[in-house]
Picture (spheres, rainbow, N blue to C red):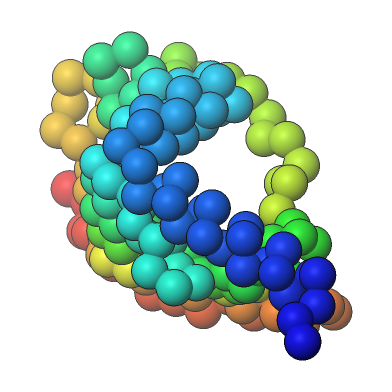
Length: 169
């Protein structure tokens, strides 16, 4: 005796699996992200393996200038968590963030981020790099950056990490 909710959950899982496996999903995801972020987003591949979505070769650009590249991101979820707009964990591997200082010396930020539509329990950044390009001077590379944020507690989030800062001339 199966319940209707179990059948519905199974149907959603099968739909997600088939939709993400289809060739049309990557261009669809790129269009949605580009529209919402306001920057060009490109994705190499997306795969669903159980309750983990793996996204590879992510790049976000403004014109010809890269803003962010990510070698791989794994997003772990539960179906019931997604219904409540919660993601169990996000693991980001080898991200590169490119900053170009503005005239005042600070990095250019054109828009304020909106409120996050999803709550993340854990975020891990592994082997990241921040590249600061001050015009024609030699870029400053900061990294590796390894950060772990655990927000599974409703009262407070824990932040752990290490960042390698190069010696400046």
